Image (cartoon, rainbow, N blue to C red):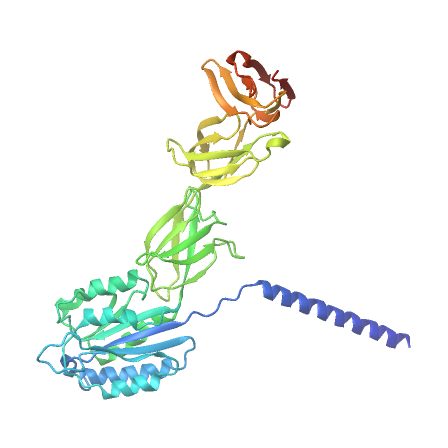
Length: 466
């Protein structure tokens, strides 16, 4: 019987543990954000102009392109979170005469439209001219207006024939954020014209059928796969020791924000690995104080890229044993010699700044200005001001009054008393002061009250304004 009871106790204990850990795992899982996979859209812009009738190894260029495109589409149809579409130019009107509007979205984006695209490719007959710029411009309306990675792949065997500017057209799409940097696959293009495609996007020249097959696979791989990078935030000795700061990745062309990452080290003690889109040229802004930017960062798809950004930092710790009435004492921080406010820091808190020299303005009464404060690598610079004192001003009636600092420079206005109060308290730094007051109901300046007083650190006192 005792054995049965013990068994029951063990069973209950295990059941409770299972429930506890189950709920704990569930609650933890709910706290971890799950990012939805990003949809990728690939728009193929396909050259069906007359020149595509030119011969290659196993047949006309158009036939080779059709065959390899069809094989590639069969592979793409098995990939999730991917949609494709087909725009064709040079296929509707015969040449001559030249028709520079001969460009059409033949198969729009949709799920499972691969059969339609293959059927359209099969039916294409090269007829017309090569309006590349017009076709790229028309692509702006081909992509649905939803968040996705929009990729454009141009397949052509010729250069612009309608006087347009393909480079400007491509740049306009990228600046608007319509597409990422396009890919261009050239099919036997004359070497002297190849450089004209570099400004459109990443250009690949296929000199024969086999190289076209390989290039098409490479381009698709780059279009679909993210790559990895790590950001090394360097101290003044060139070591990757700085961390725990947000980094904003901007698309350098469109200037749109792409990612935000709070920098960290992984369990091996090195900067964490980031998965980011390799089709974008980035500008990174590291939100140190002041911020640090690194421009024109280009990644290579499939390769791990290390991005080094110097961000040497130290801490500033403004310290004061303050009176309870003024707990939130603030300090304005500026670069040395620069009038612009860099940061407003609360006293008795630490804040990191880039290594350098700063000017401080402490918002106490009177204000204290400290110039050329040095922030050193991995060092805490402590700035301490005297403990203030407290003065309470008492009057029999409301009136007009002001408090002044009195020193070798004369009187400096610090604060005007509230004309609606008969009692008011100020927290002041140690020093010599003067208060000037006239009751509101007194119509003669003769009744002005003028008194001096002294503030001692940590001492509270009062003064009668009558």
